[in-house]
Amino acid sequence: MRIAILAAECAPVAKAGGLGDFVHGLGRALQAAGAHVEILLPDYDCLRHELIQDRQVLREDLPLTFAGQALRCRVSSGRVDGLDCRFFAPQSNAAYFARGAIYGEPDDALRFACYCRAALEWSRQCSGWPDILHCNDWQTGLVPVLLYEDYAPRGPDPVPDPGLDAVRVCYSLHNLGHQGWVEPNVLTAVGLDASRLMTPDRLGNSAGSSSANLMQGGIVFSNFVTTVSPRYAWEALRTEQGCGLQDVLARKQAQGRFAGVLNGIDWSTWNPRGDPLIAQPFDADRLALKAANTAALRARLRLQAVNKPLLAIVSRLDRQKGVDLIAHALVYTLAKKGQCVLLGSAQEPQIQARFERLRDAYQSHPDAHLELGFDEALAHQIYAGADFILVPSLYEPCGLTQMIAMRYGCVPVVRRVGGLADTVFDANFCVKPPAERNGFVFDDAEPAELEFALDRAFGLWTDYPDQFKQLQINGMSIDHSWNGPAQDYLRIYRWLVGGDPLEEH
Image: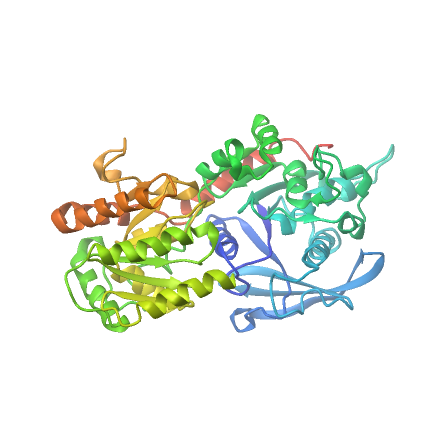
């Protein structure tokens, strides 16, 4: 089976968040399972070029029409961590991907629309159509729309495009909070009929907005839609987490074409048995060796070497991640005679300033350390050395932090949302058997709820060390690798290949 994954990111060469990890992890697992995988990416000037092997230009002048202009696109190839990648650089005065950044440009919608057109033209003119086009988030939402509205043969005597009738589209939603609301001229730029598409059953909405919703278009025109966890799929249908897309997702579910597939983590990168970035390798059979990492972490961050529970936060500091609860947990943990470590930073100046004040206030505290930035090696050592990881998100489509932490015997304390609810099962209040319990969970985003979860966590650590150790072992025993999710996606792909072609909308 031939699979092309289209996305704005792919770790480690183009990563701004979890999407990059998804593309890299799923791509490698699909390839290991025997699929032929290609990653189709914009050719950003800020790619980590040193991580691309065998880089070469395949086409200097792939023709495409965009925004009324006849453009040429340079298409390059290379291998990233064993994955075959194609990089698209439209040659335009707008220099769409020579901006020094992946996101954040005022014309992001046009940039990614041009990328969508270029990737499809590459398939049509050069590489041939794959069996599966796996698209991701709003940046690739135009791909399934274009496939039906522009590429599918029409009229009384259609001229078939070899292989197009067999193409199926799987569309993954990583965060419904970012849907790609754009002006209709973006649709016109790729050659679509905006007036035809600006209806509630396509890319418009019933509220009469003049903007087009690229994510909604991707949902409507694709053959199958996934989210990155089963719980997030449920929330998208039944709660405000659907962000206005509840009805269109419900129609997809009624067709049997909507599901949540839990993400995995890179099992080789996050492996305490052989991690070169931690002080002392260990595993579930040698859990006592984790103490050396705790000692190393305390020494590195100048925390006092005492017998106290150590709570960690490794997170972006934004509202989604529950910054009010994070700040409260710092103060509360110290009041409960615990230790606390934070690694993260904020893009919003107000939030960054808040945590800078906290950092300064606790700068000489023997039980607290705030590192406002990101340090990959320190993140590994925190997971290896901490007793608990806190993830109090207001919403969390999947979440990787809690899975990584469990791999290192670091017990999660999380809010019951999204992928956190799918992966963390409370030590005290859970219908699962004790062998499957692996953390502490709270429901409401309120300080009292968080405090109750922390009290139970610290109490178990202090009073029942054997039970705490069993909780660590339970978490370390779970397979959160990409092997299982890759098999889930292969089942979806096989079902699609044997199913119906693109539908009229």
